[in-house]
Image (tube, rainbow, N blue to C red; front, side):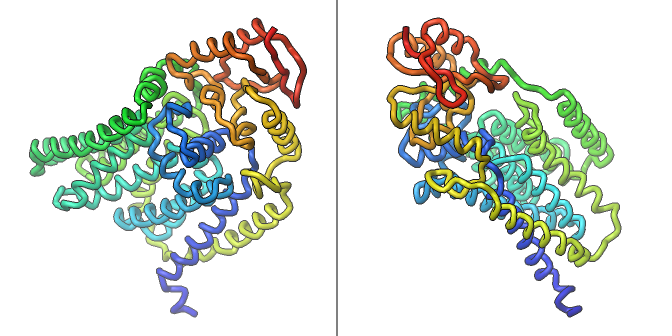
Length: 464
C-alpha cells in the first residue's frame, strides 16, 4: 500500500482524473441561462451550417476559435456536444498547467492546489468562448517561451510566432497584445539580458506573425466578407461606447498587477517572472471594454501562476500525497453533481436536449420557438433573442446579438432601412433589458409600428 501511495504518477492520474470528472459534471449541470455560452454556440453552429462570419453572422472578434469549435458541431450540433467540447479544453488546460508548473519547478502540493483553484474558478464563472481559448493560448505560449529561452529550438522558433498570430485571429485586441509581448521579450533578451538575438531573427519572427493574418484577410476577400469584417470588427469597435465597469473589480485587478510589478523589481533578471508578468498583461487586456466578474476571473489566472511560482519557493516541500486528503471531498462533490443532474428538469428534445433548465425558461422557449417557426419575418429585439431563434434553426445577423457595439458602423442604418421598407413583426420585451440595449432602435419601432398582440412576455409590433 505504501508503494502505491508514493507513486507520483498514480497520484497525478487519480487526482486529475477525479478533477476532470468533477469539471465535466459541473459543465453539464449548468442551467441554460447564460447568453455568452449561447452566442458562442450559435456562432460555431452557424459556421458548421455553412454561414460565413461577418457576412451572415454578426461577430466583432476574429473567428478562429469559432471555426475550431464548429468542427465537432458538424457531427452533432447540440449544446450538450458544445459543452463536451468545453470539457475537452479543460483536459488540455490541466495538462498544460501541469507541464508549466513542472517546468517552473513548483512544488507538488502547491501545483495540485493551484491547478485545482484555477480550474474551479474558471468553470464556475466562465463558458466556452474566445476569451477562454485565448487564456489557453497564453498559457501554452508561456510554457513554450520558457522552454525556448535562448531561441535555439528551430521548431519552437516557428511555432511560437504562429501561435501569437493565432491569438490575433482568435481575438484581435488581446491577440495584438500577445504578439507584442513576444516581440518585447525578444528585445528584452537582446538589450537587457544581453543575449545573442539578431535583428534578422526578430524580423523573421514578426513576418511569421503577420503571414497568417494576411492569409486570413485574403480568405475573407475571397468569401466576399472583408468589408463586413472591417465594419463589424475594426471600424465598428468605436461604436462599443457603453463600456461596463465594476470599479471594485477594476481596482482589484490594477492592485494585483501592481503587486506583481513591485515583486518583479526585486527579481530583475528572473526571466521566468518576466515572461509570466508580460503575458499576464496580455491576459489582463481581456477586460477591455467590459470589466465584470467573468472577464476579471480570466484576467487573474496568470497572476495566480505568478504567485504560485513565488509561493512555491517559500512553502516547505510537503509530499504530494497529502493531496489524497482531498480525494474524499472530490468524490463527495462528484456524487452530489450526479444526483443534482439526475433530479434536474431538462430539455427532452432539440438542440438543448439533456440541458438543465428552469421550467419557466423551458416554457418560454417552447412558446416563442413555436411562434417564430409558424410565422415569417419575426425579429426579437432583445439581447436574449438567440436562445429562441437558435432553437428554430434561424439566424438574423443584426438581431442575434441585439446590443450596442454589435452592429458595426453601417448596421444601425441597415436596421432602420429594414424597419421602414419591409413587412415584419418585432417582439419587444416588456421586462428585461441589459446595459447594451439599443433603446434608440426600439423607440423607432414603437414610433413606426403598432402593438398587435403579445406572446410570452414580449409585445408584438406590426406595421401601422
